[in-house]
Length: 125
Image 1 (cartoon, rainbow, N blue to C red):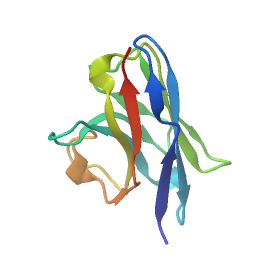
Image 2 (image 1 turned 180 degrees about the horizontal axis):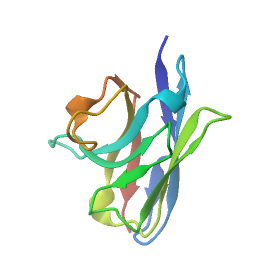
Image 3 (image 1 turned 180 degrees about the vertical axis):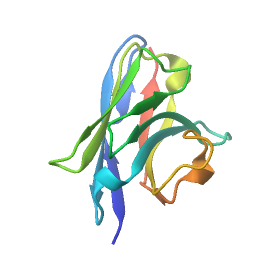
Image 4 (image 1 turned 135 degrees about the vertical axis):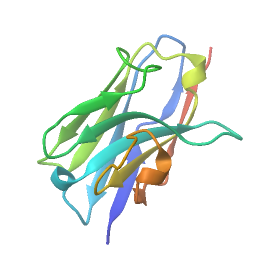
């Protein structure tokens, strides 16, 4: 059974940092693309980071480039999202998702087949 489990969310002040984890089971990350998405209340899920398991290539949306870092740990079959210099607009539920291949857009949620349950990130003073 394919499963993704996120952890690491919480409440942080503006300018602070958090590290999210996405633990995978039932498949090997090496053969997949893994993306991180944020969903704010009443809005569509927005992709911000993606890693290609086979090569380690990473992709970032402009809104997070230079602040977020996505990385993979093949030994533990886990993908991380290090988030620094957090802003209030980064608030939302963060999901990790897996895709066998990407057709057009690494940050479009419909490209992904498997999803975790999400973890809440709140950036507020």
